[in-house]
Amino acid sequence: MLTLINLFCGCLLVYYTLYYSLTDQKFPEEFINIALILLGVSLVADLLDGMVARWLNVASPIGLQLDSLADMVTFGVFPGFLMAKMFNQLKDTSTNDFPAIAFFGLLITLFSALRLAKFNVDTTQISYFKGLATPANTIFIFGVYMLLPELSLAFLQNYGINLLISITVISSLLLVADIPLFSFKMKSFKFKDILPQLILLISSIILLIFMGLKALSIIVIVYIILSIIFKKSFVHAST
Image 1 (cartoon, rainbow, N blue to C red):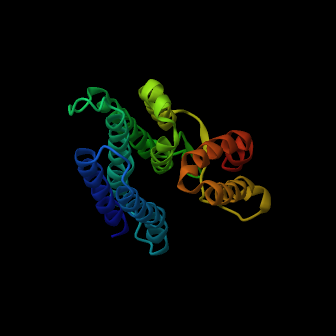
Image 2 (cartoon, rainbow, N blue to C red):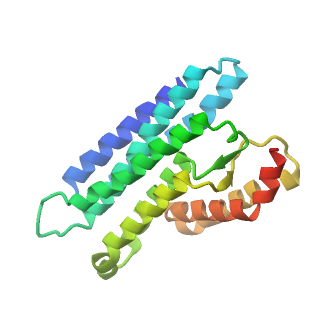
């Protein structure tokens, strides 16, 4: 049920992204509020489904496959379409044609599928991830969406498309990169074992207080940096 809630919210996220892409070229607050609620519910459901399955002793291979299928929609299709929407918003306002470059954003969707497939067959990603998990990548893309209006119009007109192309490529590569990143599945609560998670939590709270939702992409960058710094501690702990 939790996994299907994740999938249902993912379908709605894709629907509203398409709807607002076709009806509004700006950054409507209504879309942000809807996307934030649906994304929040999806993240909570995705976090809880595996935990609840283990608590109830009903974990199964079907549940694993269903989880990946749901994640593919919510954290694969949605961020790809959201990036396409951002490309579309930077198009030449003198024409109503949908810019072909917007489809480049779907590269995120393709690499999300590859990342989820690799995760399903990789038995080593138990206590930590290899590459950026699709939920974290979706938070990063949503954070970019929140930051984009803060950039000057002149900058967006001159460099906006190139900026989005660069972010799309980097995001896609991070999904499949062989970079160990710590997870929040903690085997112990010793201070040294949860230090990176604590630092990330405190940093996230501070950034959100001062920057609001615009801090989301920065939080993911901090997460990657902390994973590189503490790599030895959580990788060795899992062996």
